[in-house]
Image (cartoon, rainbow, N blue to C red):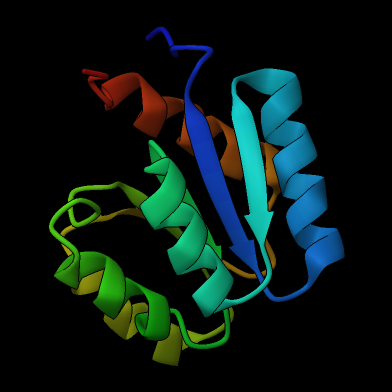
Length: 124
């Protein structure tokens, strides 16, 4: 499966250092990545850049998934969710969630899932 090297991933993580680690790994392996540390920053970046994939590691992922689903330009964007506990997995019924990881997780597994998801994205 090939990945378009122009692909862009938005990494949303409330702990910027963790988001940076994931973004750096993605950039080494497959694509450009940007980090947002809050729901509002993530929504602004997503609307501006229209990423090919969004990786969410938030305490309340539904706060971001709801607006993403409501926005016609973003609703089909695939999402990888990193969940701290079972209460977060209730969001996984969103059609845009393509993979869920529970904590703790392996960085390499998330990167592999991102590569797989990006391989399915048809760029216009």
